[in-house]
Image (cartoon, helix red, strand yellow):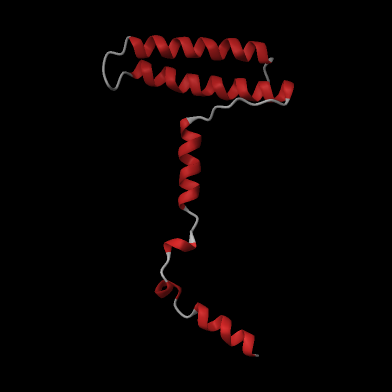
Length: 102
């Protein structure tokens, strides 16, 4: 469902206000209202950003925390050759030399 950017903006701002109110009146570290408004805020942001992009081909400078964590997890799956010692490479270097001789 695609919203007009103005409507999505108003819903996003309402979600910001609701989250602020819940955080300001938190009753405990595990206040369910804070968590619910946090999730609603994240959803409203994504809807707003989609509407902004669809209407104006524009994005915001913000990323959701979960998206950042997902990106970090993806980065953890890649390897940096500086993380390996020559011993970790085993016989790979020797195989390359043999190929050059043929």
